[in-house]
Amino acid sequence: MSQHSDPLAEAHAAGANTEGETEKFNDLHAQTVSNAALKAVGHRARLDRFLTLAPGTVFIHQKTMTATVEAIVGAAYLDGGMDAARKAVEAIGVDVL
Image (cartoon, rainbow, N blue to C red; front, side):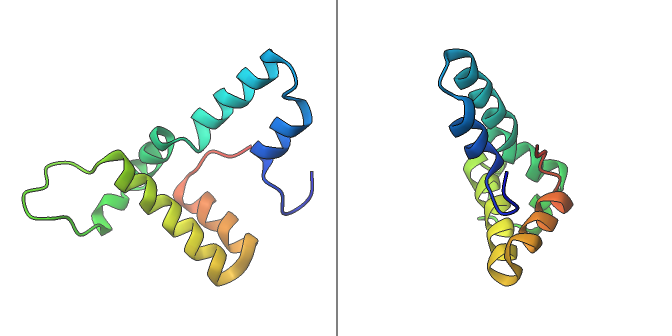
């Protein structure tokens, strides 16, 4: 695996030519970068404290929290490259390979 690779994509490309491997990839995706997983990460990191919500909003929608996590990691990447993005992922608490 190269230093700047996507572990999920590489795992899929390297061995997902069987039904069992595809299932493993899908499970890994669901555990790490799915909307539900990123929503849970955002809530564990208490990112909701930093969101400005419309008056009367009772809960934060899954897509809002997912987009928040993705935006933080993306901003770190744009600001400092892959190393900064990795640090953001670790700081937020995204479970990675």
